[in-house]
Figure 1 (tube, helix red, strand yellow):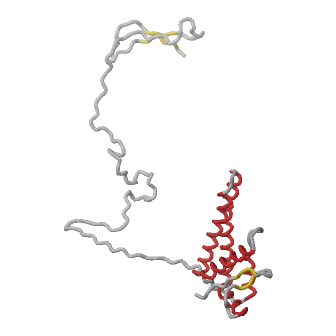
Figure 2: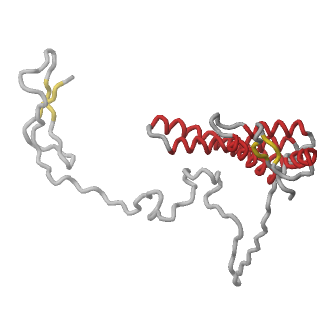
Length: 253
């Protein structure tokens, strides 16, 4: 790779070339080659963009800023002006993200920390998208698919069966619906999924207390509604026969 053109501060003002490039024309040719263009006007515009920095930076700092930017772009080997423009944008965005991160690290108040930290995150995300755009541009928008062949060796004894591939359990329904009754049971589930009827049913025992007595009146005495009559009710026996005992009364509703 040819040497990257550099600049230095001119004592009379401005900047001058810092490398031996066989005169001014040679330096311009090397600058255009580093920026992936044949137009010196475009190269001069990029040169001016790389020189923009903080207001309080010295001429020496400006020259170093230009030389660092030129070295970064030249080592990426841009093929045309579009790639160079994306690289310039990324470089400036990268410097802004680093600057905001430094401000956030020196912040003495929470609002300043949040402001500079938020800007650093935004600049960082923007730089990532710029690099992705460059990669997509250089790749021509094509997607590469890598296919890997896996050879499986299965040994099956006489009378045995084997299945090779993705096996999913369940019934004939949609295998994605695992909430239905035909879904495969969990490995840790114990016992049957659904209770079955008891084939050996046993009759319920009869009540042990079969004493007969009068049916108690649910209402308090003296609160009987007017117009209602009482009639006697024969006592009930568990055996179905009539049993003697005190008569019970029932109110007709």
